Image 1 (cartoon, rainbow, N blue to C red):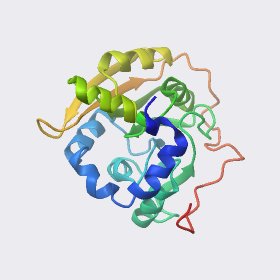
Image 2: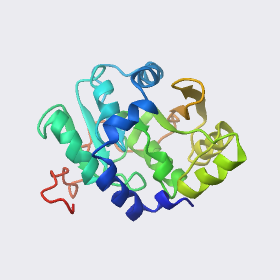
Image 3: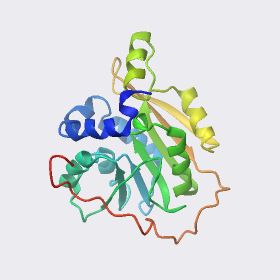
Length: 233
């Protein structure tokens, strides 16, 4: 397990990295790559969409070009402090602090679920994917973007020490273990020589047994994310 797959380490990392995230991120995951993924996601205007690991809201901005409202979930107050500056706290984005492996939402709450740049920090990715299957309605779409495994051994050792990197075969194994049957995997890259992303697009099986379509989205005990008030949050 890489050092940033520990949740406490990841929170500490993003407490500081959140301040420069929007400057660095375009060199790894840019508008063109996001827009291509949005085409695969194929959201309709009235779809109820959850963005897991929403961070500063780079993907959320793209999603709002296609849907009226986005539920954004993250475990980092540092990242959300940047997102609040973009979207405010009472606009088209509903913020929730939470964990991808224990989503604070009821079964069948969403039509689609998006998660980009988050899976690499999950200690138990299959558990998170099972949660995705649980909260998305049967027939709905789940899209996950993560880092493709490096091809050169020196980079592989470095990658393994930091966080989760995986290839298409491993991605398929994870999705199958989580109960998905129809999954496609795409490799994306800003340009030759830059880090490669692997984007997986899955359909939730129709035999789901979640709650009814009119169920409230959030569990009663769930509270929206609050804006950080001190530098230590």
